[in-house]
Length: 146
Image 1 (tube, one colour):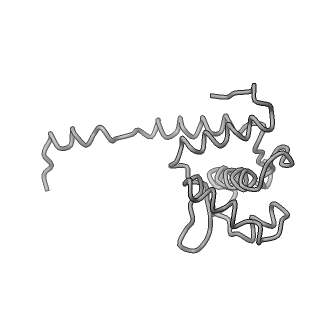
Image 2 (cartoon, rainbow, N blue to C red):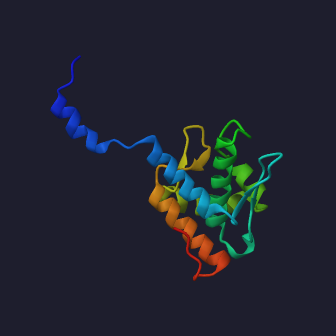
């Protein structure tokens, strides 16, 4: 089927390059420095100063770290089950659904058909906003990474 050139030109306004996607990822990684740590030998995720963060923020950072670990080839999936998240945060499983609902309702986190959760990297703006809020809590409001 032949495409009308003018249709393609109109639709091309929606195109985004892989370079743009890479730049977004680079920006999120830059903002994550000092907050999310990936153990080089294992891909395990460590979060800086979790005590100052609420459960939604801790979940978000652990899912973000899991995504980075996945993209680095340390694991087969960027997802985590509720039980795994509760274990990682060392909290009862019953405390996870409420903060998870906050993260999924603002589309910072998405839920798969199998009930696993992962960071929603397509929601770049929300991801960046939440990461900046967390950085402000950990490092102080005067610190700002763009």
